[in-house]
Image 1: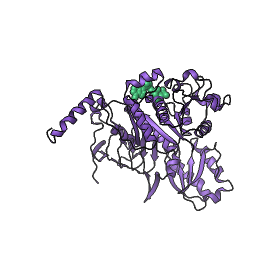
Image 2: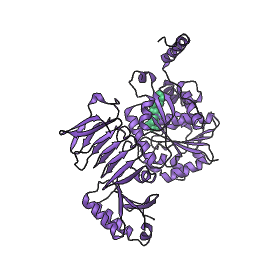
Image 3: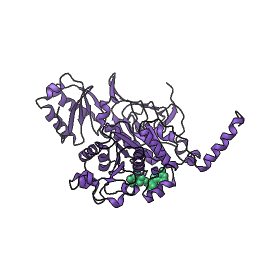
Image 4: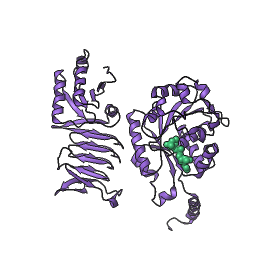
Length: 271
Length: 216
Ligand SMILES: Nc1ncnc2c1ncn2[C@@H]1O[C@H](COP(=O)(O)OP(=O)(O)OP(=O)(O)O)[C@@H](O)[C@H]1O
Ligand SMILES: [Mg+2]
């Protein structure tokens, strides 16, 4: 059966699209799915670095659409996780080097041999976004809980709807529970209430994301960190499993939760 | 019916009848293009008996423009049903999915919207507008009549846009950055933002916009 094409997009830049694409690619591949990630951010290639595959690039997406290389030659297979492949963006060209028809063809060729094609969209609503959206069968919107990011996400959702794609799903990234508690950050409920789409995952703010990005080894490789576990759960939800959303807490919060839990048996109205 | 992709006017069949979408461009050029397309040999058969709606692109039709449009259509025995506003980005999709339609109420066409109006989208309508959903931050609704929102208002609404100071705006949560009614503009007082106060309506009283509980 042909694979599913999922486009990961956001509107606002820097909210975590590439991080999400890399980690979902890893998390799905670790669950035995064949995954191809496409870096559609032409001119600002990034996914290769996050995945730690930058040294192995010979050909890129523009070489493929312009016929200088076959798809098979340009795809880079991850040696740590052979289910995972990546098609790098071109660094020296701009976004008009590829058009939506070419993206459709490319995605079609890739889905024939994979279970999932993940497309890392560039920021914005211009040409590059339209390229990334064209072949999408599912769309994941990434936003952080900031007013400007949510507003841009809303705009993108409107465009996805107008393009007659299925209703997008939401990943809320960089949530900081402590700040939400102090009412310094929008909560998950606030964001969902505005965007009115289904949540597929919450990824907390986690320093491990940054250190692992620098090492070229996404946190989803070992699902020990909070963020790594979050990507694991999102992958399961994408695979159709019903995984509950945990309540996130910062480290001190976890301790507090234990304390209150121990108090509870005697309680029942004490507080 | 096939349409040349470079033309200013797109004509297509929908579940509801026939939809004519007027693109951006100089008004007379758009009308000429429409005439040319209606003059094609297969056009008459395509339009026979169909309910015809027109989407007016980025413009709020003036009376003379509306008359001119009706005249072009009448020449081909087409009766103009509804004129629709434009939603930024591929508006036709929302119309075809039945998320946006007009309903005749006496002499006026009420625009009904059954979805969230999102950031970057502009709705313009000559008449009242009813939204079953939210109007989000960054969205804009401009109506010559009243605007009723069965949801939260976080974006900008201009009711009575033709100059009607008696128009009103109602919403289940009125939290817009600013409100316009007729020739009046009011800005939201900073401190009150994001507090939910239940259904409210905005109207002009004694020369200024006031917000009061919405009692129906
Ligand atoms: N959950 C997180 N916790 C901590 N840091 C994060 C998290 N998610 C992303 N980051 C960091 O935020 C930065 C931007 O992330 P990323 O490059 O994935 O965003 P992007 O949306 O792809 O950006 P662009 O729009 O430029 O393509 C990176 O430095 C990344 O490490
Ligand atoms: Mg990126």
